[in-house]
Length: 298
Image 1: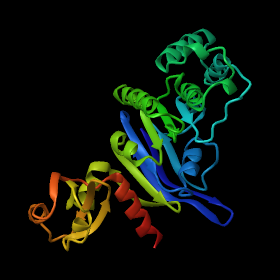
Image 2 (image 1 turned 45 degrees about the vertical axis):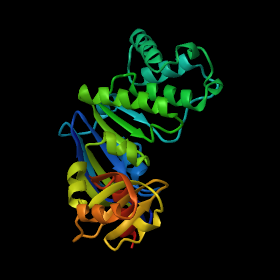
Image 3 (image 1 turned 45 degrees about the horizontal axis):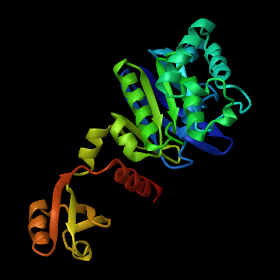
Image 4 (image 1 turned 90 degrees about the vertical axis):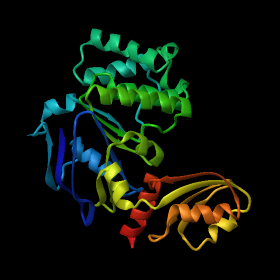
């Protein structure tokens, strides 16, 4: 288990991370979320000992992190740092040997990952000859080739099309089954919602909300509905029972007022417009993210 206790990082007069704490258990994907400049990358770099914390503790399996910890860790940074002139196989081997892998073992594992990531034919290509998505695959392999116990991913889906995003998601879910500890930092709220069991949302270096995602959703409220329809959406938007609406071309996501009853709302709307689908839903992580950040910024 990774434990971060009262982590604070101060740069001169700026508090980049302000007394945050969290735990990540094996077999879990933990979402570290927040807007640009919230302190996510500083938190990650502090956990990895790239920068030293001003205050707080970082424990792995109940012990302070030591040199052995870093060979158990895989890191995919948001800023890509591959040597453009290097060959794919040489790049992978370099990162593997930095993690103390034997060359023979690293070579065998590299080819397993080339096949899984569907880039076998690029083994002897230079990094600069690859597409952005395939460069990202090389960087991902570099982070996981040594089979780390802890995997820290900063915007891992950047540069991937939907097919390759799904490929990476499937790999991450296989890591969950194998018991890895995974920290995921991303701006893709729909992806975080599908993958993460627990989250920490930060803004201006401070915790905004944290905990089990399902429990956060329940605490946030349940009076949310989704409605699909044919006709004039203004009929829905002007309804007095609505507290907030996100209106799209043929459907709407709606937060009803606290005293409004969803099926009374449906009955009234259905008498005025053709409703093709209606469901009571949980608030999306995207809505929780936007509303929480707005509230914490006021």
